[in-house]
Image (cartoon, rainbow, N blue to C red; front, side, top):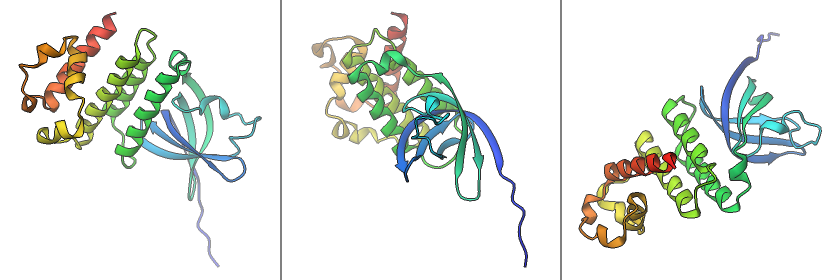
Length: 213
C-alpha cells in the first residue's frame, strides 16, 4: 500500500468577476480574470449561504482581492476583499447591460490561464470609464466597442479590414460618434479606409475627450 503526500498551494491576487454559476445546494463557480494568473474558474464553497464570509467580494463585475487554494481538482476561494464595486454604474440598468456585454465578450474571447497585463489594464480602463456618471447611453455602447476592438487586437483575433463593414453595419455611425462630427463629414471617408487601426486611433482620441470632461 502506498500514498502520495499532497499539500495545497495558496495564492492571492486581484480579480474582476466576469460570470458566476450555481453548483449544488450552496456552492458557486466563478469566472474571474485575475491580474497575476489570467482567466480562472474558481469554486466558492457555500457562497450562496447568507452567512458566507465570501459574499461581500464576489458579485458580478466586482474588482476584489481574492485568495484561493489549488486543490487536487479545483481552485477554491478562501477569502475575498472588495476593492471596487463601481456603484454609479450598478445604479443604471442600461449601464449594467453594457457591463454584461463587456463581461461576455471577455469570457468568450480570453482563453486559458495566462497572465496578460494588457488585458488587465483594458478591463480596468473600460470598467472605470463605464462608471463615469457623465456618460450617456450612446457613449457607454461605444465604450463596449472600444473594449472589443482592443481585446481582439491583444488576443490576435482581429477581423480583417475587408470584412469590417459586414461584421458591423453601424461602423459609420460609430466613427461619427467618436469624432463628434455629423454624417455629412464622413461622406468623404471611403469604407475601405475604415480599418482596425483607424478605429482604435479614433476610439483612443474619443476616450481622451471624454476623460477631460
